[in-house]
Length: 385
Ligand code: ZN
Image 1 (cartoon, rainbow, N blue to C red):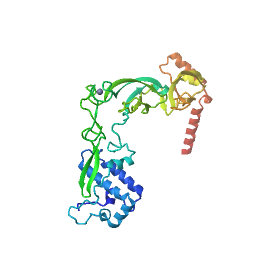
Image 2 (cartoon, rainbow, N blue to C red):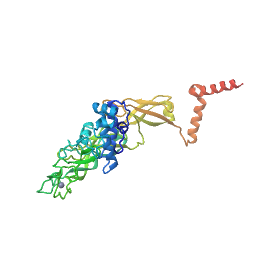
Image 3 (cartoon, rainbow, N blue to C red):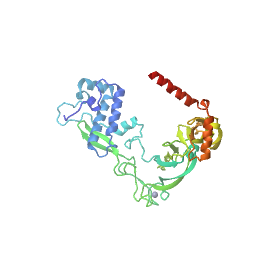
Image 4 (cartoon, helix red, strand yellow):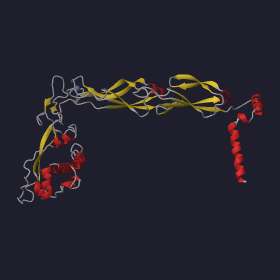
């Protein structure tokens, strides 16, 4: 008997493991070593068979019990029987790996499943695109034209891939199934597996004279300008979907989607925080002191706001419902406006004198913070004594 690893060891599970653990281990390994994912890798192929064999035995309660009791001999009568070369114990075991796999992965995995019809409808792939927007365009939503490349059905051959006047023929090697069966001699007898038909590459059809326009592919890559509707409120790095605007399908399958990922250019005035918008508005020293009606930019345009008398630098006020619309929902965020006070510079003598006159008239009541500050200092000095 050639080297043969314990089935539990093969799947990397404990002897008493549950069916779920077994299944999980099998899935991981089968996926790892699947021939479709490791084309031409003999070692992976061997491992894949080993994994499948182990799972075949251990997932069957009766066989598993026998294996636990008697080892390989319990599940393979020829094991250790000593009959020279008599490794035919499993007979011509015919398990289709594609089928085992298909039942796990919903039949859509790879192309190895025998149940998958190569001539059936195949959905087109998604196409991904990038779109750069201004802050306002993203906040309010907009229509934009973008240029993409996608595969479209070839009009010359109407998607068949065959030259005018001809049509694709069913592949003689696989009878149109796209899969051929391969027999492999193993210590357990001849195991039959199916693999992608090399003649038609799994398509099930052979094109004798290919269409000159699409070189037999049935689809051609086109550059297209597509109008997209950018949803209001989309944020930097988010993706929206234009359904059915991706690659065309094959065999009358549906088209894939167009996924558009948005990049937003920074704005000189606005900044975004979730669905709220922030901006800073500089006001004059006099406006802050006396109060004033100021103009505030919002994403909807300018609005006026009454700054109260004695507004301190850094004061933030809120404009309700002036923020960004909730995507796919009602309502919107708020806008926060932070007031900065600009200290006047380059004063002429007359201006300076006016301020000096004002300062002479000013008293503690005008500068409450400052007064409080110096009182605290005084207290601190006393504490040191
Ligand atoms: Zn064509």
